[in-house]
Image: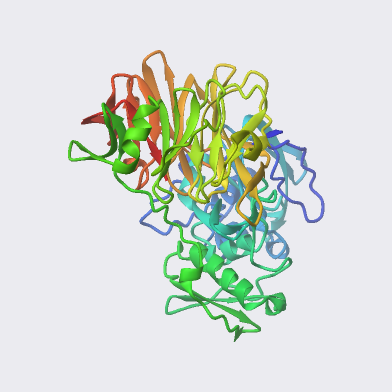
Length: 561
């Protein structure tokens, strides 16, 4: 089943310790009241003398953009008793429209606005589409002649502008189920609050739902808690004091816990190392980084192509041939190619279907002879993945490295897509776990992400529930992973193409409008590493806000790992 990044918006009741529902309509604030200079430590004003109830509510909401000192400014709008009760970290609701404040009864006010997204306590961002309306109830009392809020929903409320300026994305790293790779889970945290503590608490919780379906694991024992906060950082070393459950872990598990923390926390300024303690006593952890997975892809930064009678890397306008594969690849009249330098082999869609090519030549039988095959994949364990565009048989086929008889050795994986959906391309991320499908349906280009479930041997056995990113209008062309947290997608209407970059939260930025695009491949270095092939055989690269011809030509642009 495909799960959209939707929230079912529920009515909010205010009682006792009320929470701002993550999946509900949102609250808006005036963007002009929360603009932040990124070079300045932004602090909104506190309550002014004689402010009306409406002004107090507006000021309180605007102050949610300032997380410094545990939201000190926002708490100044609350009664002294309620300051200790209100939990600003419960959630963040992001509004994208106008708001109203109306009186319900004496000392009680209704705040109404529209929601576009939400962030939960663990930093998980969810887009809300379509927008819906949220109603929030605030109670106010007079304290020494000044209005103060005596009851309010937990959490904060931000405009889209305020969210962009006051939150930052952090990748929390979990292990793939076979412990071969580290898998990023993008979260969002208030950048001016105690980011370190929030990130660690987020990492101690399970990953987002679409990754947490048998595809990823955490090295931390279930129920592990952060025992001391804020987390001290001494000479670049974060000293993370955890609950006693970590003492039951063996040396291997302790190494993995520390590596999860290091790879995650090094994104935070001033943190370069991690020590794990229990009751503030260091836990002995023998450590060897060489035994742990790395975050680099190992991909060759050069562009790999077929051009005329050559198959190899573009180098200063020439093609540096891969001699041991070139003749075999070209003999298949290739249309789509995936190349693995690690296994020195190519998966080629050409005459007669999908073929495996290595230094010994072309495998004697096609791995997959279905029609309308999309570009294949070779994963980091040597398995070759194949799909056809209509998925009429509902099957993704995977072939092991030692395949002898494709009909016998094939690993079928069921994939559930909507009726009339056509697969245009698919790609596996660096971590060998996150799988992206680009599909066409109902006139829209749709990007689906899922997580691959594997046995300890690395053999894929299934995929989880799909996460759908923001759809695009037009005909789907191609898609590629840009980096750890972003994908690039190409769509077109007639000859006019459009490239957008999306993160896994569904946030979208435009990356130019090339003419007649047919193939997109990822490279090294993020967006600048992307390359695009046009119908005319020209290779383009990103330049500023658009695309510029490199001067090179090709008949096939090759995806590589």
